[in-house]
Length: 130
Image (cartoon, rainbow, N blue to C red; front, top):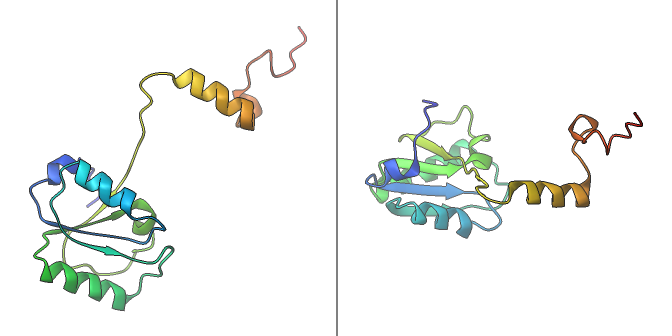
């Protein structure tokens, strides 16, 4: 289902993680830092094409390592529509909450890239001559 679950809520469930990233270590490190019980992992080529044959390999690996659930990245999950997994598949969504210095960060981003759109510019920066 499409229900959001915190990674910490999955900590007791043996998981197989798989991803097609240029550097999978960040993804695996995030899972470990959240207490996920990794019993297996599959590091696939960056931008991998998911086929029925590859999904069968993932299913076999999950069975061999007694994984209850499968974990993947949001980037990979969008490529999995219509493919059949034998265990629950969870996509890991990473968010960042800036708890301090948000305005400083936004100001510096504006200095480098400019405002995202004219609507986001401040009245002074928009050329208001009134």
